[in-house]
Amino acid sequence: MKSFTSLSVTMALLSGTTHAFWRMECHDRIALARIDPLVDPGTVSQHSHAIHGGNAFSMDVTYEQLRASECTSCLATDDKSAYWTPSMHFQYENGTTEVVRQVGGMLAYYLLFANSGEEIEAFPEGFRMLAGDTRLRNFTGPVPDPEKSLWTAKDKTQLLLGQKAIGMNCLNYAKDPEPSMYRHFLPDKDYMDANCVNGIRAEIFFPSCWNGDPDSDNHKDHMAYPDLVNGGTCPEGFEKRVPSLFFETIWDTYAFKDAKGQFVFANGDPTGYGYHGDFIMGWNVDTLQSGIEQCTNESGQLKDCPVFELQTEADCDKCKLSMPHVLSDDDCAGPADGLCGNVAIQYGPEYASALKPGNSEAPSAVPTPTTPVQAMPTLPYTTAKSAVTDQYGGGLSVANVNGIASQASEINAQAAAPTDDAPAAPAPTQPPAPEQPHGSIVSTTTYTSAGVVYEVAIEEVAVYVTVEAPAPQKRHAHHMHHRRDREHGLLGRY
Ligand SMILES: *[C@@H]1O[C@H](CO)[C@@H](O)[C@H](O)[C@H]1NC(C)=O
Ligand SMILES: *[C@@H]1O[C@H](CO)[C@@H](O)[C@H](O)[C@H]1NC(C)=O
Ligand SMILES: *[C@@H]1O[C@H](CO)[C@@H](O)[C@H](O)[C@H]1NC(C)=O
Image 1 (cartoon, rainbow, N blue to C red):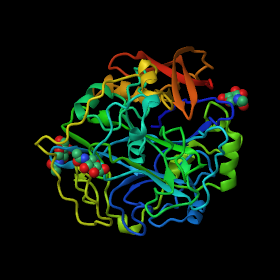
Image 2 (image 1 turned 180 degrees about the horizontal axis):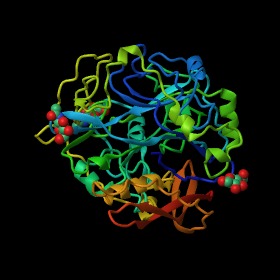
Image 3 (image 1 turned 135 degrees about the vertical axis):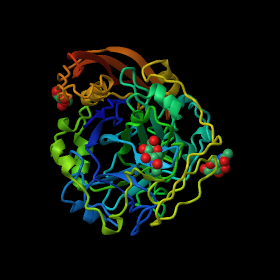
Image 4 (image 1 turned 90 degrees about the horizontal axis):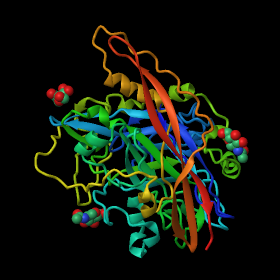
């Protein structure tokens, strides 16, 4: 079942400002495994990851080895990069955990955001980076984020920018999408059960300001966030610009709607504050550079980029890592007692203690606490296209929904659950190809960076998808209404 949320973004059309992007679709993961060549090189990693990209990925993979991958789970065949994040698990009250179904693989946006006069360079050979901090368990800024144009120096520390680069987007395709990176923590389970009927989209925005070194000891210090997370000014010493990476992974949390327990990331983080993402560049540098220069179609779709050779989704899905022998007994998907690697769940708010790599002890049951833990803030549902967008500064926002029909049909099929003797669910009907829709501008957003006012107008178009679901006696056609928000950049310079 493949489903992607396709975020349509076009930002900040400012003369001289780069604003293009493409959306790398990595269909299916190559592995769910305790492998992390950045944090735990050469050994079994602390916790499990959802891993995508070139299948030569290993505990000590090099650029050359990744390039020699036999295949990649991402759509562009040249992209042998490695993309990974902690996996999401559900822990029942009795301590048993089970991986949450990942909907599709993941998307890695390459956003070509830079200010006037700045050039975006391809990642060089050997480039690696990490975003986020696995040990964080709190958020040190106001909730929700103040409007970006009001950010002061204390909102712009690298710690806070990094914390604001995380998003836990509550998906409900029947409503307008929430803005990206609106909520920097996992909502509590009751909230998810009530609101997030299509799951949680975990998001992380990578830093795009660079000091020119391919890597650093902690895989972070060679990079910095621009002062508005996804745009803005780079700090001194980090004046070079690379593409802004933004990862999205959808987890079907709603499948656990009536179960008692909690969601927890594989690193023992039930808050989401410790979410993180890792990247090892595996492109041919010239191909990537050509992409940066030529993939400027505002659709962001790979097929509209003249540079990349694409494979089929089926070929992406076939690409798997061969599991190292030392991990052959690992069962990170579960059901199993506790998290794989015997990872302790740490609730915070204090900084979590470091996990040990290579833990091979049998996981022991970690019951969910009965005493209250850190109270998570509550953020009401909000839409990316409402005034809230203006209030929070817009920028990269708005998701939606292309090719969700297959998932919608599955949910419908469940909703209309047939009795035992009812016919099996038919194959989902193909959604009609969306016509080139003409929408209406529903809102605009502005924010200021380096004396330049960016204005982003959001155009709304409706896409209708018809899905058939089985019922015991007869078939009902469900008409589902999805909205598609498209941003058109418009820009003024003041
Ligand atoms: C824990 O509870 C879940 C959900 O009820 C169940 O599927 C699982 O088998 C239980 N685990 C154990 C070890 O009893
Ligand atoms: C962008 O791609 C679309 C197809 O999605 C195509 O119709 C359009 O001509 C392309 N635009 C440019 C400027 O190449
Ligand atoms: C929040 O996390 C930071 C580490 O990033 C830590 O220094 C601080 O003490 C934590 N706050 C609380 C209230 O525990």
